[in-house]
Image 1 (cartoon, rainbow, N blue to C red):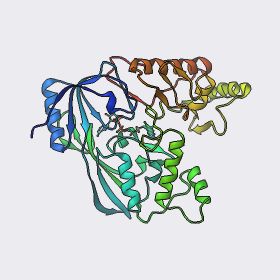
Image 2 (image 1 turned 45 degrees about the horizontal axis):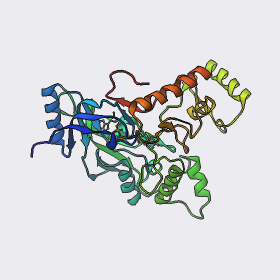
Image 3 (image 1 turned 90 degrees about the vertical axis):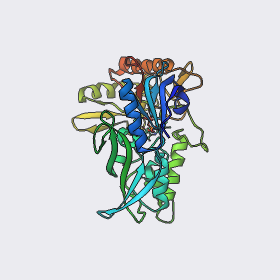
Image 4 (image 1 turned 60 degrees about the vertical axis):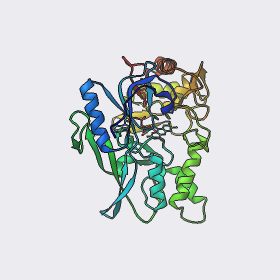
Length: 341
Ligand SMILES: Cc1cc2nc3c(=O)[nH]c(=O)nc-3n(C[C@H](O)[C@H](O)[C@H](O)COP(=O)(O)OP(=O)(O)OC[C@H]3O[C@@H](n4cnc5c(N)ncnc54)[C@H](O)[C@@H]3O)c2cc1C
């Protein structure tokens, strides 16, 4: 069956932020041959291509995407034997990342349990370098397989549509308690060593409290998770910022709000937002900061991409004006003619 290309397909419902216009052309990819076919189509029509996973880290322009959007529906898990004492699991890139975590935890394979509940697909995990609660996907990735977008060749690595990701996981289910403080604290509250499933449940509970899941059993906010990166600044700028923060006092910068990173100092973006007039729950029209997480920009209902971009601009301007610090977004702008924020 030839691949079906649809016209003007709305993209907002396929994203977690729920903003943006349609894809000019759209296709759902279920086999590697279809990836090749889609790239041929795009080359013939000279179209830009966008690979859509779970849409959980993107802001799509109100005008939509003026090319071909490929929604990744490649599915399946396979075990590929062992190497260096680790079990190799090959996951098709269209699988939910969290389905891979469940697959691993069910088989007592350790290494990704702290990354339970991260939205999105397996294929974008290496692109985004997913990390949280003391674990990072870069620590477990063995191989990333894909198809080159320009030539259609099967290449590893290159600039490609990721089709499969191989992760190396530790058998035996031993929990690494030093990986994350809250996991260690949780383990202390038990009368036995926690299982991977118990760690998963603990992480999901932490995420739910912060409004950082898209699981139907939790309260879900329309966001891309953390919108801003924690900025790394020069020592000089850090000192100026520290003096302002300590002299003023007030909420938002409790605990460790800065840490060393080489010759720079990294600061918690959440602290800077709070002290610049954007605390949790602060809204401007239909866009605001989540009431449960200081870095999540939330579509409160019916917002446009332009309204989200306007809000992000206001936040960045407030932090720049107050501290002289430039906040960089984590989220990716898709389909915009020029940088939206
Ligand atoms: C509530 C919430 C909580 C979050 N928490 C975390 C967290 O704790 N840690 C974290 O790291 N992130 C977090 N995120 C961000 C997001 O989940 C990750 O960035 C995730 O990896 C994005 O996956 P996706 O499939 O949705 O990618 P998309 O948003 O669909 O795409 C993101 C980018 O990856 C590219 N891409 C997607 N699939 C492929 C592929 N197969 N081949 C090539 N390129 C591809 C896209 O083209 C795009 O450039 C969170 C997001 C939300 C909404």
